[in-house]
Image 1 (cartoon, rainbow, N blue to C red):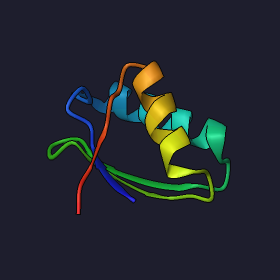
Image 2 (cartoon, helix red, strand yellow):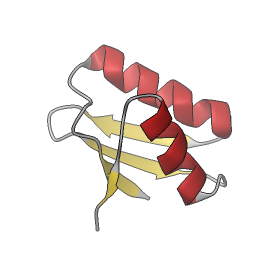
Image 3 (spheres, rainbow, N blue to C red):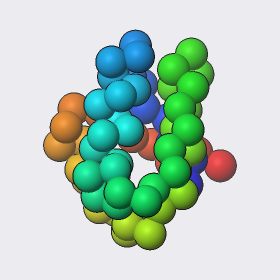
Image 4 (cartoon, rainbow, N blue to C red):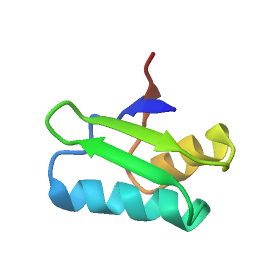
Amino acid sequence: MKLRIDAMTCGGCARSVTATIKDLDPNATVQIDVATKIVEIESTAPQQKILETLAEDGFPAVQVA
């Protein structure tokens, strides 16, 4: 899954996003490019749950191709 998170503006934000995803799926793979605000996630957690949890934590995400 590839997401764009416009609210992710720094390394601290990136760490928070990673922690949120890892809380849902400790085995998830998360790759973040803060400059482009793109997050690539490989996880067994349901996509909708990831999107909802990120939004609840202040990081609303939009899926990109």
